[in-house]
Image (cartoon, rainbow over all chains, first blue to last red; front, side):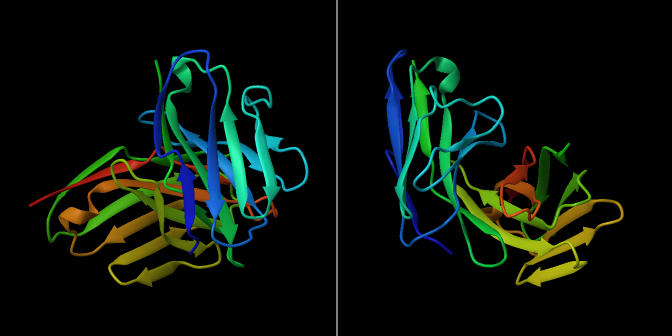
Length: 114
Length: 112
């Protein structure tokens, strides 16, 4: 498995502000992803965080709204910009480790936007 | 397109077996996973199965895969109250991209 930490674990933010979420892994990983889990819903992939290049975004997600950094193979950040109440969700990072395509998730960041 | 379907809710008594079902549509799925999410927590990888397998057993967990019907199930033997959680089925196409498509999750409630 992988030891993955996220900061903050939760936050309550005001509309129009931005929040940066950090994801730290205990060892180097090639593939790192960011997901969103809206209340009562399943997980939706936001983007793949690429080390040394721009993130690859899924349909419906754009860099201006969700800028992502990946400065090295153990760390990534996701920023939720110009927040609205619709951005209230759990944001999770995940990494792929092992030859069997096992994907491990961080504990998540629970974001509430007022 | 990819689609993963699960029943939304299952209620069992402690000590009984639980069976959580999942169907998927993409026949090129290579890996199928079960994740557990306890209240307020992240996702815990429980087990996974390759598409060339029919069954995988891991302690109290048994995964059955019917590739013809694109049906996956998770059986939990001797279900305990600590098993109460949301269980997500997910599929992956091993294109090297390694992204997962998740079902909406099945809430398992275990009563004493």
